[in-house]
Length: 201
Image (cartoon, rainbow, N blue to C red):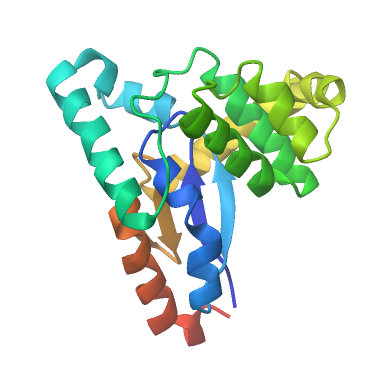
């Protein structure tokens, strides 16, 4: 059965909640997830969608909401986490390298854990080097690839694909052509996946 495409940009705050829950959800259902890194920032700029950082009242709500939801899920979160990320694109280009080589999910999970639980911004050291080391990847090798024209093109292509599917935010779950946006729609995506699995093989 095809996995659920989990479109995620490292830099999205609510995505922490989803990233950290994937394994548990998989263990309790027949669903599996494929991590699809992309640039939600590029799409948001096109929509003139100003991020939380420039909306203090909304940002205050966001951090409290994440704190509440994390507690509900049994997750720890050091709130507020450093935001926005200085090296947003680099964090996600590393994820693209990981997607091509098969370690994307491990990297995204560890990077988010260090960002939200240790206060280390994703895409910057010490998070970046420590995350790659933890999953057995050589930082110098990965950085050379992440900064290459080939990965830059793959990153743009992934973002174009997300855009073509109607993805406008992160986290976003896509089942066939059905789109579910937001951490609170993870279970809805799984339910839809389960109900249509015979058509998705």
